[in-house]
Image 1 (cartoon, rainbow, N blue to C red):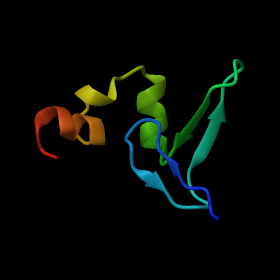
Image 2: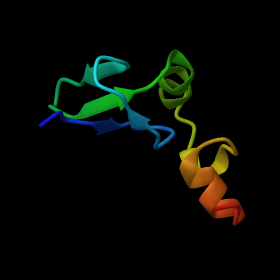
Image 3: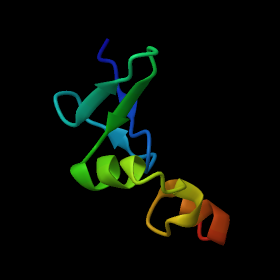
Image 4: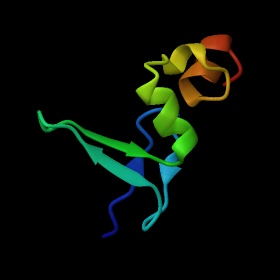
Length: 63
């Protein structure tokens, strides 16, 4: 069984062998599909307020 992960910022599924995994010192694990998601998360942007994310589309009523 192949483990699939979901991007911690945008909510899109990651294909096996792609993306980045970031582990904080306290043990939290973040998965990113692209550097775009990684940089937005580092800038402390909220995914609900970013229009192109899954949470942002849901908040706007597009999904």
